Amino acid sequence: PPGDQFKQIPDYHQAEYEPETELALLYQKYPAIPALPDLSGPDAAKWLTHFPNDPRVSGPVITLDYIFYSRLLALQHAAVRHHDTLHISDHLPVVGHFRLPEGGI
Image (cartoon, rainbow, N blue to C red; front, side):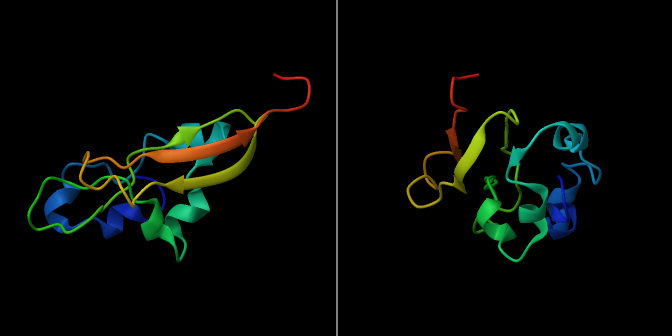
């Protein structure tokens, strides 16, 4: 996982993940939701997207879902949808609202 998330994963789940993320190249090439600073900042918990099927865990513990997008798009709003999705899947949806450039892409 990107950012400092690997250190925050419970010890008993760390074996499932790599400490160095394969996503680093994508983050170097494209803007993303969530942005890297969001994953390590004070509000990092709002970007967690994976809730393992494990009784020891009471909520999402890691970010596994991302949107990488073209620099031609202007991001207007980004969020992880928590309020009505926790019981639908073990992955929470990442939402992005974008503005297209005038004249299209």
